[in-house]
Length: 206
Image 1 (cartoon, helix red, strand yellow):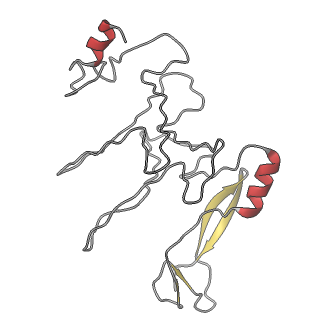
Image 2 (cartoon, rainbow, N blue to C red; image 1 turned 30 degrees about the vertical axis):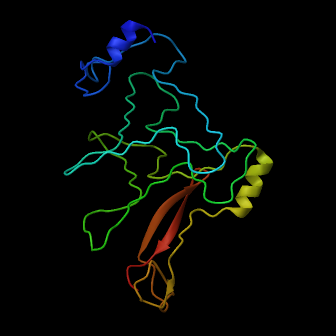
Image 3 (cartoon, rainbow, N blue to C red; image 1 turned 60 degrees about the horizontal axis):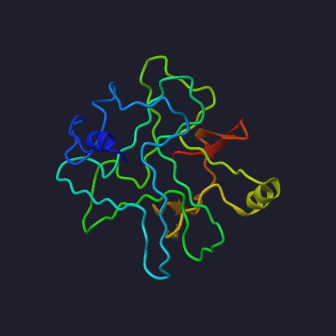
């Protein structure tokens, strides 16, 4: 990194306390070079014990905030963009425990907490009166890759998994309860399977 770039990075022109570049979203640090990253690190850990992380950031707040916030702004005819993209690639290794492309935890202390608390918050925000999607969804689950492997996954994977709960008796108030009699279906929730709309039957009485 040359001295001019170092001065830009370790400047306060963007209001950062420690390091940053670009004045604002409307006045960003710009490049005309394609296929470049502003920050890129290739790191490895050869230790056979313990836990290794490429980046660990712990941020304490007393009111509101985030340890990290990522925002991708589309200013042209974009294709395939993401706010955050997390990947695990199994390349010559094995996994005996958990593996997740993204993991989100809320650690709850003793007591009862209100508010819309959740481990994952997925939102579609309509910024204008005409904002709409033709085939969108709040969440998307995809099987992709080698056709034979996809076929195996299609026969072995579930749409989603709930663990740690117990099955309650009828009207017992668990996440999953036994059915309590033959009551009418009152609502339908739309899902899409390979682009075709299907409907999950619901009822508003237990």
